[in-house]
Length: 446
Image (cartoon, rainbow, N blue to C red; front, side, top):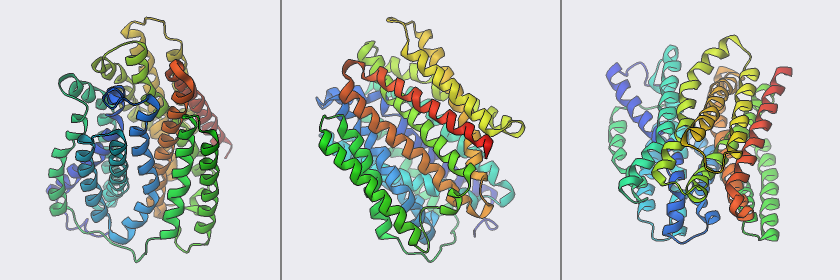
């Protein structure tokens, strides 16, 4: 891609700063709100199952938009898509902060998720524009570190904000990041564009397939079984139509060539299961701590922090282990540790000491960190170098699909589980972690 040769080291640093801020912001947007869900539920006098859609809407929108945004990035250029995504994200954050009702807040989160998709897809891909080929791995390492650090700090930042202000400030803290936008536009080099029109039919089927399925799973929690079944069946039907339409398209959004590689496909499914487990735990833990254990939002934020913190510590170690040991083994061991940590959380004492919670969630973080880096490496290197962009898109898609599925299941479980909803979510998270471990193990025979 063009622009690398004429980019000075100083400009490269400024551009990367803007990219890292945007990617970190989108990661923070997913993690920071979970802690405040009980507060938001009380503020709008809404049920827990309805309030969870503040998270669901963000994940669902990002998931639906990933493939179309990846297609747009090729035709419009990564620079334009990244800048537009960041602008949409920040403006939607203002809408979230001033939302007068829960439906308007959920709608603003839908728009925010669309912006996050643009930032996630174009941001990672733009690293290849900023760095020469020999230095791309350095840029990707910086991206991984920035996202991991902000994910680790998310609960702590949320706790600190809620200690002195109300929940709308969780969204207003995003506004100063708009200053990165003019800097990025001025410093970022132009990138190559491909003559490619947007596949409107594929985009619509993609949105209907994922949207109807995830909404249907969430509707199950309201007790409207026939309506939920209809939404799920309609979503699966649209998914079938989407795959058929993509098979006939000359430039499909779905990378069928990569899915013919067993290692890639198994890595994608391992990722979906693992991120579903993660979000099931992340969303339900604040309800467990604040509703069942009567802890404050500040205490909850600090108690949740050990998971992402240990993930950030373990991820680079797992990367070095990948050089000497099979990816399938490292990921399976990591997901097994995650399942053990979640099981230990299910059997917490009635009145646990803070340390009892901390070491269990730290174990979950270690397990998730052992899975994350090796699995991403396997996914990105399973296919040819020329298909790195498509592999990166599916890497993000697998993450958001897992998050969306897990978030919808939280809504379902809270709707059906009553007072035991949070514990049931942890059991479901453990089941997904074990499924991920089993899928990862299957890679040894491919």
